[in-house]
Image (cartoon, rainbow, N blue to C red):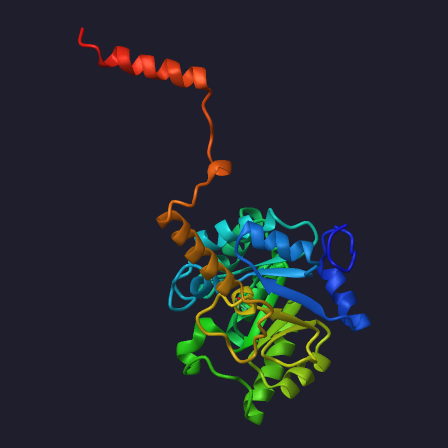
Length: 293
Ligand code: KIV
């Protein structure tokens, strides 16, 4: 048995996701970047794990997602994909791994699949990314689109801002969603989009919409694990915190430090013993070694 809802351990596929949309069951996706947390999310019955390039801010100490490399994404995808039995793993294509040309896009998407063990890839952007999406889908790799707030183009967007608040921007998002669907994506992440606009998009496309800061009417939701568990420096308004594991870590580190300073750790149960006769032999060896020759 795998998952709190008693679901079996069969790996989910994009066909299952389409069925989720048809029967109105919301899909639950989270980010994870390592083996142990991916395994916990999978055991909890989370449907999909995104190995996001948000690893840059959340794990690797970068100030944005831009410095994240393909090699880093491959390493962390592999750590996640080797941990899960049921969840569908999506590997994020990092900045400049797909923008230069459709060929780059296919080769790097292929790396996330073959070396990283991902089940699909995600990339950011609307109309300018259609050629890359068509090429990756043409190579037999499922693609998750990502429109609205696309952090890799934060500079061009004028910052990390809600997108589609004005009617013309919202209409552009709707057009992009339809164009991406046409290009073959199996789903779309809608990030930081007014809930009503995300709802209109969700009703206008056949593929799955997965919202983050996009309201409750998307076909699924994705949250960044570090926002959920009190591990990020700044929790965005749209994120919900489910536990304060950051506080638990801090308390644990403080208690450990205090134990070490007070010589209360390690205690006897954390230490190994040597038999009395072996200790005696050691003493005589030391004596012999100490005798001048
Ligand atoms: O990298 C990431 O975690 C993402 C999510 C915000 C959807 O792209």
